[in-house]
Image 1 (tube, helix red, strand yellow):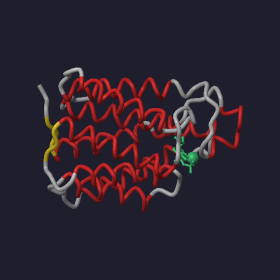
Image 2 (cartoon, rainbow, N blue to C red):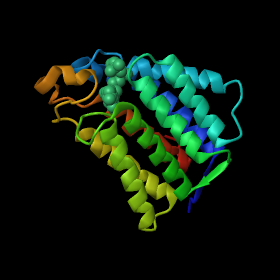
Image 3 (cartoon, rainbow, N blue to C red):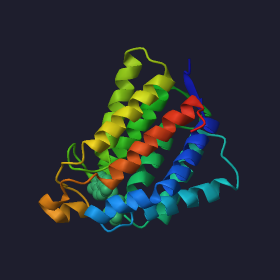
Length: 215
Ligand code: ADP
Ligand code: MG
């Protein structure tokens, strides 16, 4: 039973997310070339590479220092919409986690939800606007309901990752109402949202870090 997550496991999450952003860079860019300006993969890979470089100098002891550092690096190194949005996610998550070196399941769920609320404050996305929020919102909802049903943290994070992936897939038929893709109007339908795709990976890598999985 996994019931807590510590700074080292969250650092592992960040490393896994950075590796995945580099691995999936071309796919994310391809998605963004259909409904945006073909830079989402490059933006995320550049931002997360800057994060890893900065952490190479030493991993902070507390969760707020770790996540606030990630957020500030993303805000300063990514020019596109996704930099401030992901940056705000990590900043708010870190602020809510606080100066601790471990979180219990409720603490992690609360910090993740605060991160998602930060995305809402920043970008004003609503459900169905075809944005990263369409993956993030179902993920934190699934996390809360899984924990309420008595699942351990690792199982609840897997449920959250599944919900994020389903949310990503559900963006396919949507017409974008936020961001660059909204300029296309009806022509944005029939393509996955790139930000929802990277956000599904955010939760997939968190679940893997909590499991301590190889992949
Ligand atoms: P840019 O749109 O500046 O080129 P990216 O391509 O890196 O930036 O990121 C695009 C993604 O950002 C979109 O796929 C969408 O998920 C997300 N996004 C854009 N605008 C918003 C917004 N207002 N609220 C939430 N997410 C948004
Ligand atoms: Mg773009």
